[in-house]
Every structure is written in C-alpha cells, then in structure tokens.
Image: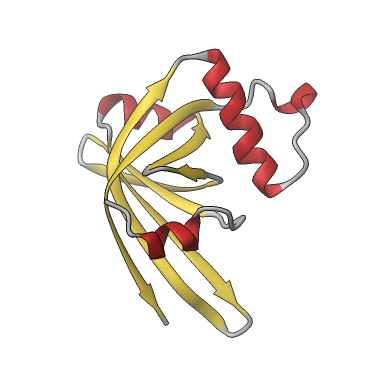
Length: 128
C-alpha cells in the first residue's frame, strides 16, 4: 500500500529510480524512468531487467530526490512486476513516462522498451 505522502513525492516529479531485479539469486540494479498512478509504477525496459522480471517478478524500486546539499528524501517500493504485451497500453505508457522527462516524440520513441507494470505492495520513505 502506498500512502498519500509517498504518492505526492513520486507521482509527477521527473526523478530517476533504480529498479532491482534478481535471477538465480543474483541481484541486478539499474536506473529507470518511471510513471506512477494508482499504486502501479510503470517502466519501459528490456535486456537483463526484462529477462529477470520474466523469471522472477518480485522487484524493488528506490527513488531519491537530490537537493542542493544532498538527498532530501527517499522512497523504497516493493512489488510484483507484470510484463504487458498490449501495444496500445505500451504506447500510452511511453508517452506518459517519456513525456514526464522530456518532450515525447512518437516517431523516435514508439518502440523503445517493453512495458512493465509494478503493483506496489509496500512503500517506505525517509527524509534526510
């Protein structure tokens, strides 16, 4: 469950996150851009992260906001990831996620990454 406070921190800010996946008891952590809505974090990914999710859908996500003098707050999310093969949902997610960070250009970004939706089971936050 995600509290209103955590939702307000992560929902609209163009922050990078680190997605942690695991396969064969070996962790893999990599930065991702994300979108968040109603308890679901959306990422577009491929390669090792996608292969790990297909093998083991339990994931963790860390999001941190940096201020002028270092970190201001951090959020850790635990959840279950689902690979979404629906082309229309993926297109909508690409526009929402990439558009959060920069101007979305469907000509160049329409095929980037496979949509993964993470249903958040728990969230913890801290302020520095």
